[in-house]
Length: 230
Ligand code: MN
Image (cartoon, rainbow, N blue to C red; front, side, top):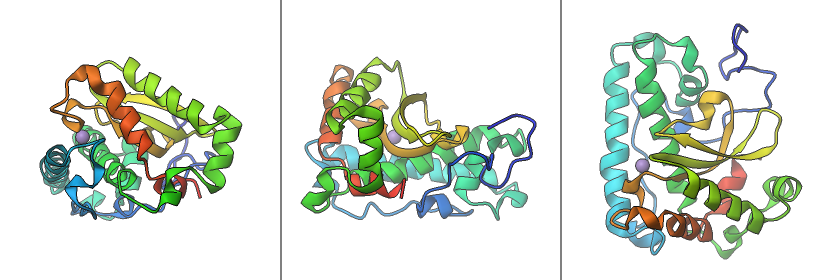
């Protein structure tokens, strides 16, 4: 986003970035933890059931509660969707910005991550449609894309997420962002997000981060990823 420009509700309108048709991004205050929609053991062996359950019921739920608690004192922000709150972060009162950045991002990030881990038909195992074309254009093939995601995740120090995003110029790019920062904060559209916090793959040791990211990519629901760019 360009400083000093009048921003629309979705940020700089010259960017070819729109909030994806994502239910959680359309939520308004008070925000609600979305149901996982599948069994906790369904993402094994990439993510074990106990880890997935604690991550959804404790970590994600805590971010939703914290976001709601902070926004309770800011009724002027209640008509805004989560997507609008994230993309317009610079416009909101300074006192509430850190909470929207942390807990609002975390709410959006985890909601996408649960969907990306969702089991699906065998056809979801490979990217299709527009996303497949973009991968061919920007990474040659899915194997090269996945290798680049794994390398970026392994090189990222500390907490954060590894992302496949659609940039302001409609290219695919890999980012690693710290803590819970959503790509939407910078006007980039999340397509794939993999949580790199240790709580995402505990009790495995930190040295296994590469294996965890590989395992998540191996079972990724590419229908969900593809829907982000359609
Ligand atoms: Mn997490």
